Image 1 (cartoon, one colour):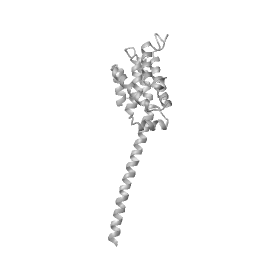
Image 2 (image 1 turned 90 degrees about the vertical axis):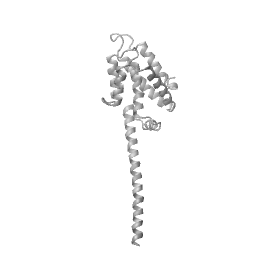
Image 3 (image 1 turned 60 degrees about the vertical axis):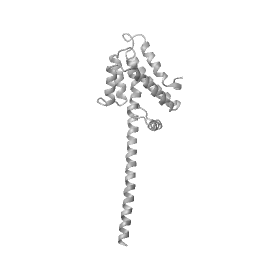
Image 4 (image 1 turned 90 degrees about the horizontal axis):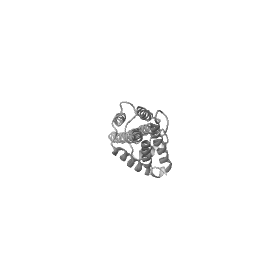
Length: 190
């Protein structure tokens, strides 16, 4: 009888050990999801839990989301073939607001883009990615994303402010890039 209780106890311990491991693993996954959601929120500025969950369901990584927000800024800043100091500062300020810290991989990539004009393929890739991404969003989610991204890009374009701060704040080249960016949102831009 004692032998049976001993095996019974071992079996019970083994069962609960296995169940505890499952619970611990599930806890780790939930914690990682929460950390990911928090990072996505910091980078995107999105606070809406539903949209954040949707981004996670689409398996969009923080690095991808960072690029989604930075490429328009960089492209507008380089629209006239050079990046002015005020544009550079506007891009850096926007990146900082998105939680991109000096020394991070994202910041290093941004520095590279601000030092050397990115190849036109970057903008094309961004447009294709944004179109595909927007197809998965509701009309209001697309509009929110479009307003945020294009609003930040327009701020960069306006940072130089025309000749000696007078005249048209946004150059024709910058308007052209802004229009090209807007086309990525498809139905949301109509």
